[in-house]
Image (cartoon, rainbow, N blue to C red; front, side, top):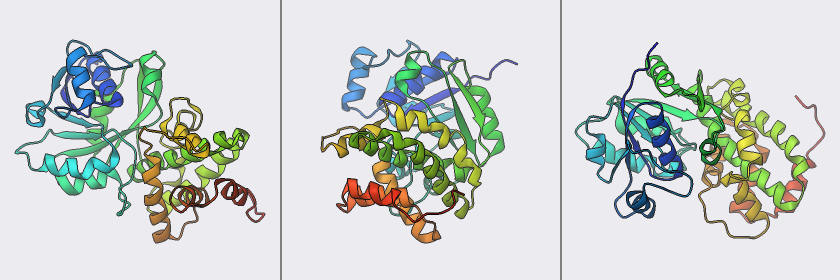
Length: 324
């Protein structure tokens, strides 16, 4: 069956946003990439059509006007820091028209409210556009080297989900149909917090504990997913456990590298979404009464001055209990 091709706008000109524009163009869609006028990354793309990892295909249009990039677009893909989503959605809501479908391509929870990103977008955009999420394992560096991976598209609207999986799938990325929007979004956000914890272990020189971290981290997040109405098994899928290799072990993982730098008392200048997500997760834990010992330890170290070495010792000195 021939693929249906769309006119797609991508908002966010960082490495991930630029890769999305390139990838969707490569699979045949008409793509325009939006970045703020004057931003360093957008200026670099406008001048050279390149960043440090890739060159944009000639067919990708570059645009600094949000109104122009959305003109005629059928799908909007958003790739910005998760805590900027509400503000960006407010900007979108003021526009006279929106694409039929909006795809959120980031992982996190809103600080303060603990809300999932699809909820944030829906609150601001209402029923003017169908909301979907694009999540799962993968690094731009690996994709640009031609290394394939599997990812997930999920949405509360079945027709939207089916159309996106059919339209976006290619040789480089195989998409699966998500079946639990709540669990997939929480799992995708939480894996970044576990990634920071993995970086702590690397920085302390005890990476062999990552196996225990993976097992126990997945279990505690599965319990949280169940407590907020999702399917606990989602934590064991691509959104969370399936993303651990890319997050807990990869040299490209910002969250792991941030945790490692923190443990070594070194500066780290890149965005690590788990730094913000951990506070939303512990707030959810407070509301639901779910025990999140790993997330609590990460928050205590990052925000409350707890000793990293002591926190790790306390995690592994918890009272003896059955594994499950």
